[in-house]
Image (cartoon, rainbow, N blue to C red; front, side, top):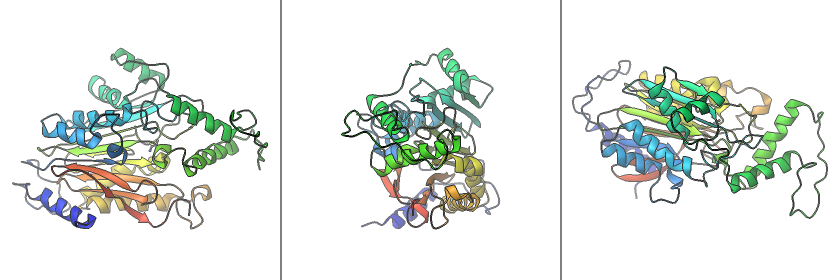
Length: 391
Ligand code: GLY
């Protein structure tokens, strides 16, 4: 039986073999410009494995199939993430995702095209099921890298995208109502509940904004604990990165962001360098998990820069997790052990086709997806810390 360690080792070695014409360069130098061939690889977080939208293939399988049939790497990756974007069962991405505090689904997405050195992104986009395609349109049709809110929606309409009034499904509406009941039980009753919930006791004035936010987060996390929403859906997101046979690297990240967020809250996913970064000479990295931690540390950029200095994908990812841990000092963000009380994960791919998935904690969503010529599979994430965020 092949162990995960053996697989990664053999995958790395296999990936290295076809790099004909590539001299082993000192780690401080960039890879040579001429890359004759590399074995294609697609990696993503677990949602790229789990969701098929009623079809027969998941995101990494579709992206890999398209890459190996000659499609542009970014087009292939976006076609892959369109599967979970459209899947109503995936409550962290696209159509049917968990909405903001007002019950409105606001979507964030970004994409980067390594060889073209182009990028596009949208933030707080309402009404379009596949924001990754709008991000690509920003990249292709504008001089800009990021459009947000009503302007992003207007742009999408001008580009011919269908703009719907509401991307909620019955499921996402039901979950939003449950969250409202937990946050505001005085006003939102459970029609099936035997008894009305007692009025909650607040340590602070109920009108206090900070207390309201704390209640909102606590209620959301209580829904994760109660198994009503998967932990992976609370901060949503699919990040999918790939390399094609010519050594071209691209990446895409798409999400509904934090469940029940303050309207207008923008996470890491649409911010270049945070939720996604690609340098075609070096590698690609993207993330899922608590976006604020990533926004503060611009971790995807940090990971790619660490690989530029010679680090492996795994070591570069660990470096970013250590940076996040060191910069997390507020008591409200720490568990009883003094460690971050949230999870964050990175999916890292280098120019040689070597890859890694790393996480602050392996608890919860513990695997990531890979597709190579050997087929699609899941592998365990490498954790920085033992235990779980709530320890
Ligand atoms: N990582 C997704 C978000 O925080 O919005």
